[in-house]
Image 1 (cartoon, one colour):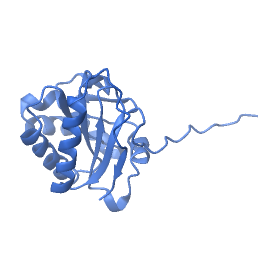
Image 2 (tube, one colour):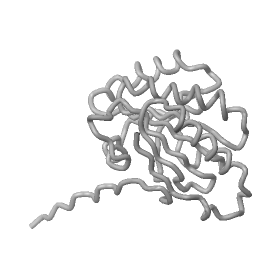
Image 3 (cartoon, helix red, strand yellow):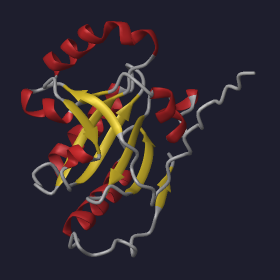
Image 4 (spheres, helix red, strand yellow):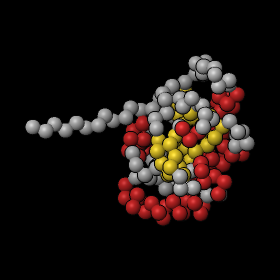
Length: 186
């Protein structure tokens, strides 16, 4: 008798959890794995699961570049999560993203063509919010410090700026236990 064991579904990602390994390929063509690709920097990861989600992801990315982007100790990764039949158009999709993204950002755009369903479960994705940007702040040790989904919002951006700055200004050897965990939903 053969017994089939279904793989355990990933739990919802929470503030304080280690950021799960996320494998993809940057627009430069190199394999990339988060959080290792962040090289010990504080990271903002902006994920999108639909074509329309690129607009809020790009809005958050523009805000990041204008307000935080000059810091060497904080980085941004834009992560298009592409599943289903769209995977068949991988070459065309990557080519289009490369042509629409300034070359200096190619190493910070990581396309992911697998395990998109797992990430949807981790981020509590719902069809009502399918076109949202899903944002994750990861500290320099790889721990999730903030979760949010939605369109660009000035009040959330102000909070995010303060959090990114606070995390980056902390001594890397110091514990971040004093940071209040926050899950923020729009």
